[in-house]
Image 1 (cartoon, rainbow, N blue to C red):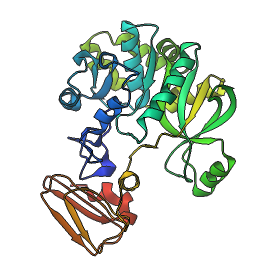
Image 2: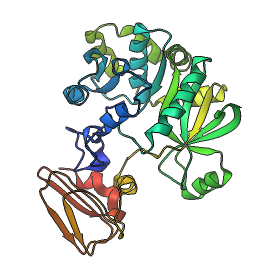
Image 3: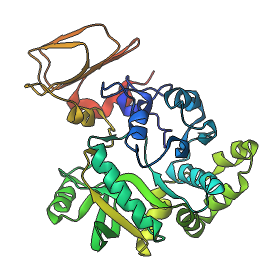
Image 4: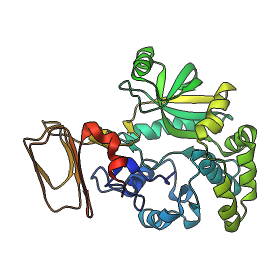
Length: 335
């Protein structure tokens, strides 16, 4: 899934060129390229599919040149994750009606790809032998209020657990309770299932979306039907009702995952100096502490005396703001 606009990462990420196509970690690979990289040995390039906004198709082709062009699905409108996933799975089923599928966002970070491959391999083995829906649950390292949670139940085999319930983003006190309880996991939005399982689940829980998918036979059909699909997340459309019916499982995991949704999460993943600064680019810091700086395109950046700031330069745009005011970046980026 590569259709988001990454508005919380302005000015680095813009609607014209969002964060999934940017080398945000300064490692030489963009987030969508890193997403593909971590499946090495699990999935050959000809089996990858990308669902993205129609405006980003050329960027996907440029960054993933080995991927089959007909596997890039161009959404004519943003309709949230349920129609996005449904469209990909209906198309995949046309090519192979018995295949297993892993669904993942293109803009997350995984710091331990080897452990990621082990977990996904386990989940694939589980869905190969059952009609289970599996969500990857991240073992929480802190009482995070920015993620939804998965309540894990009994172990049913290996490391796979039954899902009791999905929980909305909690208040801090509730997140602390989840952490103490020990059986609550962050919902990473990474799903594993057989393509037949998910298409049948959509027919059961969201027959209107399933019906729309059946109507999308040609490109003209896509242009007409997809923008009219119900705008709903896969969590609300399938995961929550299927969990209530006892059909959803989770694999607890710890592979250094972050949804990289904001500057705070980037600061967390960057290597930091002794004063807690994380920087990408040719950046020199004097008497600075707890800053996150991204200025990869600049030939030289010098900062002095800043404590707890975000500094980002991209093209002719520059952001300097307190990390404590990060929630206002959408407001700051308005024309």
